[in-house]
Image 1 (cartoon, rainbow, N blue to C red):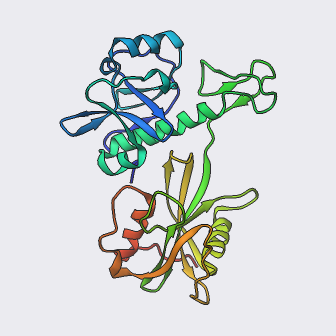
Image 2 (tube, helix red, strand yellow; image 1 turned 90 degrees about the vertical axis):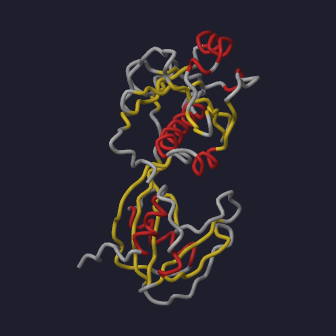
Image 3 (cartoon, rainbow, N blue to C red; image 1 turned 30 degrees about the horizontal axis):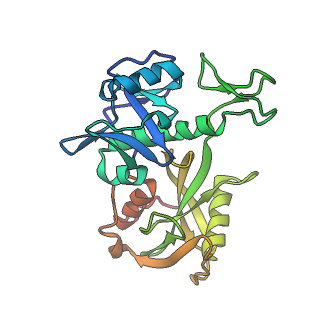
Length: 288
């Protein structure tokens, strides 16, 4: 999955550091990221790749934030893409969905995690309590309001991925009105007052109109595109297999045989890994 970069490791603790020429810089423009391409190899640009004009802008406007490091490589965020006017040779804007299919896994993991923090900084420029401008704390990854003292930490939204099985069949869906067109599993955010297992039951009923039993936790995955922590569950059909699809959420919902999953793995997402686990008949046993 996206976070499986062993033997390398992501260190996400906040360490206020000064940007150096060899550090990586994440620059986003909505859902696009500035990427360096050298002989078809994609990477984050380093400060030295950005040229003297943009480097001077980085220092002048003070919108550089330390993000994290992977082993000893440090990553920073430049929060204002408007200073990136003319791209230097070897640099280009690239959609995050393209990065997923074309870049190495380590770059994807770093890009998605950086995007999570980019959204958080952008969405919290003003205090939600008194509407005053917020400031970045220097000791921890936190924004605070100097007017009322409100503290804002990065938001992580729990959501479930549900693999519903019925013998040698699994329920697959396609999202409605989304760029991602491949088959997926039922997914949804955990609501106020719910357990993750309650979310599985509710989402499967809402989207497919069926009941489930024997809900078993499988694995989790950070998903920075939506600020999620995805929690994967397997569950068994309970009762009728008749699908009543929510057409507002889904474009398709169907039972698929185990053999049909043979070529559906991309080793990237929790969804695809769970599909592979089912194909290989390694679904965790139900608890008694």
